[in-house]
Length: 487
Image 1 (cartoon, one colour):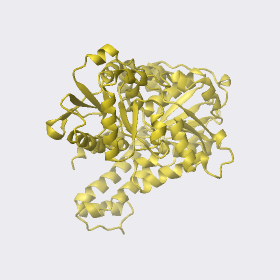
Image 2 (tube, rainbow, N blue to C red; image 1 turned 90 degrees about the vertical axis):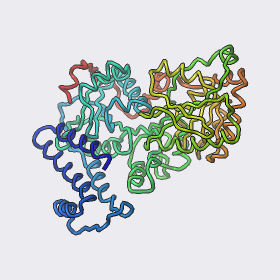
Image 3 (cartoon, rainbow, N blue to C red; image 1 turned 90 degrees about the horizontal axis):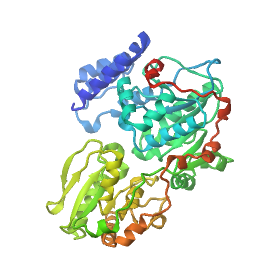
Image 4 (spheres, rainbow, N blue to C red; image 1 turned 60 degrees about the horizontal axis):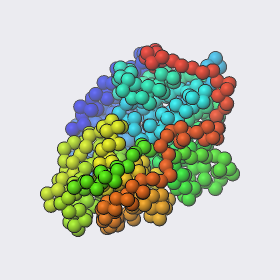
């Protein structure tokens, strides 16, 4: 019951943010059902009572052990709630709008995929489109938090005040759409919502921003099934990277299914902009008396593809093999909350660095000598290229669509390993040896890359998206203080 306080806070937020009487009733029903499932696991008598109230009176579980708990009964309720059809109202008086369906709008998640998504929105706004952001999940974010985040985050400040924003906390209230509206989605869940709305409004295809093959985030279960099924819905695919596009193409997924007569006209891809680094000078590298490993350490469950555990195991194996002598220290970066250090073999430590501003991050990365950024997924990830461009010989992993040779051909500072611990340790040994080849490190930092979102989302790319011309769309600019009035 360790997560009970978090569940309680979420329940209170859902109830508090339910708009109107119907919103309060809807939130109360949902909270009651989830509470019933939760309490029923610990007090079976009450569980049977809640089952009867929910229409599940014929289902019984006499289990007192976690291993045979019918947890998928609870997940069924959650999936039905999350994927419930959005009520729609077609309003002919509404101006044409490009509706972007997002899971949430929360300052805490503005990294990685959200940075790409918001820069895409910024480009669409600059091109003259009217954009509405629709947050599909009940949100814990308050308006004051959003406004405070805009003061601290330049990207939010440049995007949110120029958009219409809809936080969908009252799930009973129909959302108005114009008859000519178009639709953009961020994830498999929001794509299902966007597709459902599009079918009710005008039947247009959704533009699906694909930044990963999302079924990999789940075991082979119902959620994995639904995520994979989403790619069978009609859509225009906008891929984050050519390599990710190649995975879908090679596996004949989504727009590359055999039954699509025009796969090339049904997709586009962009290059994710990476942070621009100035590699350390030759003099700086010559004068270093210690050597530092920088590990992209993501221990959170949603970052499982970054293989935190495998990285630690590989570091320990490398230490035991003598790859890193006493000159070497180890730093972890990327965790959302972890601080302190993690013990490694032979008394060594992995010191966890906290999140830091961009300029500090640039200096911090450049102060290291070997990078370790694992990625067990089709998308190649961004940190390996940032580390390599900062002059770090960097170890990453290969995958089906990005074999060792393809990754290493991008820059000599990338050392792609086969997906085995032995191969990762061998690549770390190569990278550690290259750390002393100063001229090679500096030369390897210069490779073809995109460091500006204006390059990622140029006019040629935007013109390929199946949206109407923004020339017919009146420009809109809404002051930040009007956010609360719109939501």
